[in-house]
Length: 210
Image (spheres, rainbow, N blue to C red):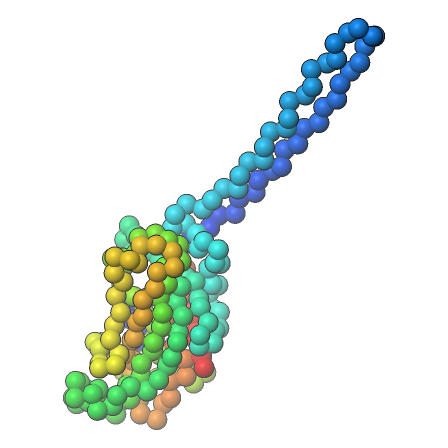
C-alpha cells in the first residue's frame, strides 16, 4: 500500500397541487356562483445549501475506478470549510531522474520519480480559495505498492505544486497541480489513488489508471 499523505446533496420533491371547481346554476334571474380561485402554484424544488451538494454533479462513490482524463467529484471538509471538488487526473509520467537525484541525494538512491498531474475544479461553488490541493498517491501494478519506503515531498522543475487563488471561490474555477511520487526502481507506477477520509475514500479509494 502506498504511504498516505495528508491529504457535499439533498433531494427535494415538490408536490404538484391542483384544484378544480365548478359553478352551480339556479333558476333564471339568479347570479351564477362565484368562479373558483385558481389552484395554487406548485412549490419550487428545494435547492441544496451551499457546500452541501455537488451542483449538477453527483459525488463519486468510494471504490470507483476511472481512466486518465475522467473526473471524480468528492466532498471537501477542512476545519470550517466545506465544498465539493472535481479531480481529473491528466497524466502519470516518469519524472526527471537527474533533478530528483540532485535534490534528494542519497535518500533517493534506488528510487524513480513519477509525476501525477491533475486538474482541480470547484464544483460546489463555495469559497475554497484558502484550501490546499487534494493529495493523490501513486500505486503499482494491480493497485499494489510502489515499493517506496520514504515519503518525498516538494517540487521538481516541471512538476510544480498548484495552489488555489482568490478566483477559486466560484463554481467552475480550476487550477493545475502536480504531485511528486516515487517508486522503487523496476516497479512501474500504473495508477493514482485518492484515499481521503472525508467521503469514505480511505476504505474505498478512487483509482485512476491508464
